[in-house]
Image (cartoon, rainbow, N blue to C red; front, side, top):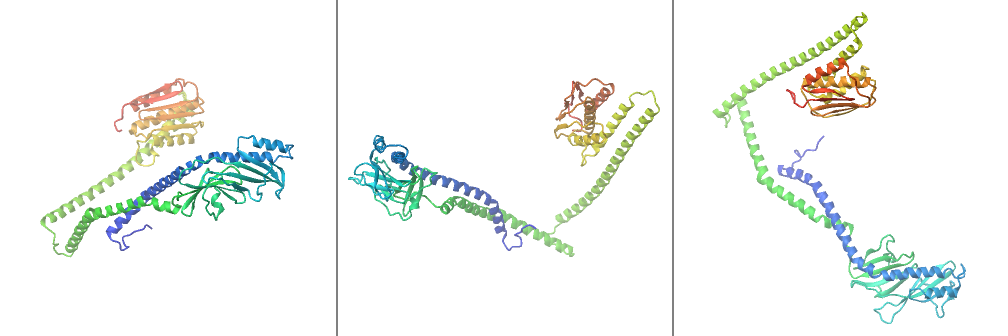
Length: 507
């Protein structure tokens, strides 16, 4: 049951606009999605443009932190894997990393293997070494657990070339200890803001009126983060949706406004005029049916009504005559079909009687097969659905079904590629006769695969068998059907080709 707005109380103008709006909604939705996609890409590009200088400026610092982690792995092997303490400390100092002090300690801070005068606060995973110049980074003490011991390393940090909008560079350790390397430290109530996604090179989050860019160092318990002087995060998901909707909704409203103006200026004016004319016509009919004179009735309209009445009567009579002719034609066609079918049956019965009496006529079986093939063609063409007898491509499947049902083909698969071309009835009959004759000969040659291709002016049938030898009866039939085809037909080895370049009279 369809939806209708006719009885909804809406005006014609409102109904037109509603239908137009519904048709426009898919376009607006696609435009909205495209605008959202572009806006999201722009925001992402701005974030990448903001974060890239920070990432590049801290690459040397990140490299030193990863090298320090490798040195701690070396310290972890002291007195456990046969590594001497002095050898380990000497190896640490000889690296290209600017390392001041290193050592291995008990959990209470007692040195096990350490440089002299190195007594770090082992309760913190990270600690800073202040610099005399506040604009230059000082050093850093890193502490890491290794079983029942603590590893400590003191190193100097390189200078950083950061963009102007970076106000702070800090590190956060495994125990949420925060060490500010450069700039004024900010109060960070939620340490999770400083820890980024380990799968991303940088993650930017909103922090008060500023932003925090978190960058994983590559060490599980240490993250580097920078505080930026402005909100570079961009709008939220809901904000992106609202921002991307401005242009599509503006286009939608503008289209509705323009459609409303055009409807009022053109369509509604013509519709109201047509309504008025229809109302006057209905009034004329009502008055005329009551025996009065319609206000708009003139001599011209009276003559037109008389002419229309005569014309309508003539059309009804011609329709009845046409229907009678059509019924007679269909009856005659059925009668001709049955008479031809009966003639084929009489011929087959006569051939069987001659064969049974042992007459001198040779190859009665082969002749009987050909007559049965003619009958199958006749039935196939008249089994096509509809009234057209010009469809060769529709008659072929009917013919193949009839031939297989009659057991005339062993059953080789037949692959068909038939162009939907219509021909005259005589040409279709000839093509069907040639088709069944060629298939019959190929089947007797032992073909296992047959391909049949029909184009606008040719028919080609090929098979995987040897060359087809001449046959007097078959050659005579092919010659006869080729003459009906108004073309040429014959065998080329194991390929049967029928061509008819000139169009038939009824095509």
